Image (cartoon, rainbow, N blue to C red):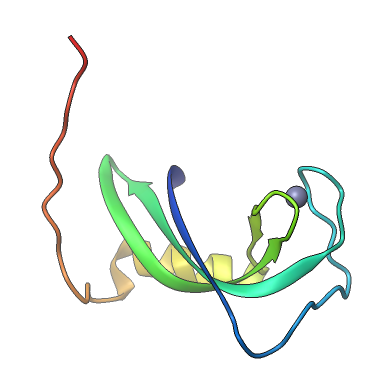
Length: 96
Ligand SMILES: [Zn+2]
């Protein structure tokens, strides 16, 4: 299961900077905020979008860090434990 790149981050209005034990794995920064993140994962060749994943997001580069618990929940959902809330059709384009 890998992330395909499209990402949407919704910062939480409640709960400000939560610096406890956060260190960005990209830049090593410690400023962060709680957010709900939507990511598109690739599951066996099929894109699956998971919305509102709780994450800690680096304020410097926007890289989300998911807790072990959230990662496990998302993995189980993508593997078919959760029913889709909706389905979208996707156009595929190619450069010629
Ligand atoms: Zn960062």
